[in-house]
Image (cartoon, rainbow, N blue to C red):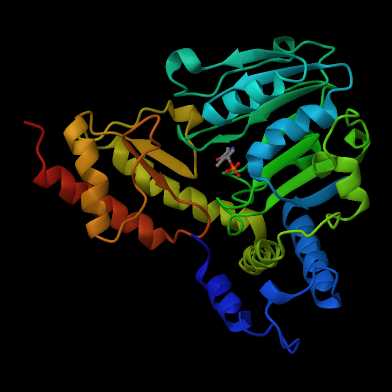
Length: 349
Ligand SMILES: *Cc1c(COP(=O)(O)O)cnc(C)c1O
């Protein structure tokens, strides 16, 4: 979802942005109008996430999946990297990185069907690894790290596609943060990378230009045509969060929404919430009925009641409620009401 005030602003600007006489979708990315848009979006993002001056912000394309390759290509100085496997996306990132060097799984919760995040200590990682990679919020399984791994001096790289700007994050704890924008920031087509400056400039010679952080940083994300429309919408989303009080406030709202749903799940016995409590995601809440037929029926019936996209990922089944920033509290209330009704109308034999 995108916040309603953002959609309304975008609708107003759709035909003509300000007095420019054209839509953002029609502008040259080299025009003064768009230059102002991308600079303002970056400034708002920096303010929102409290990004220090020694970090670059890159607005790229290719989705988080492209970063699975860009990270090893840019960060592997000696060719060694350690990955924490906490779900499907971190496993994909791990497999992609294995094409480029000596890549090992430092920790994994696969044996437990990724129902919790792996615990790590500094000793979990090879001291000479070029970086450690993690996925902070595991979209498909509904888990989130309840701690930031201690990697000592080894740069920590985090995929934050499904939790970015949902709550404050201490950026200084990370070497690189990346996120596909379409979960919580903007329409599909934009990928945001936050990278500490000293990690830029080590790309392997065969790195495609489009994946080279140095080229992208030097060109201020304008090496080629950037995704202008999603950048413009992302700027509106950042400003919307700043206007309601920033990430501290956003976190409070998100906590309240997630608590409503988890409190219900914990106080009934029809649905099962498979995730270990300490690893629960605030953005993606997964649950099952335990009966295949009913798991199939639930999302269909929910859709009829106006509750969309509740089917779990095809790889895990069951249900998943994605309650990103723009989902209002009332939306979660409606879901809980529906869950109660469904349980009453569909007894388990
Ligand atoms: C959705 C998602 C991805 C994949 O993102 P694309 O932008 O589609 O490549 C990667 N990681 C996480 C955590 C995701 O939620």
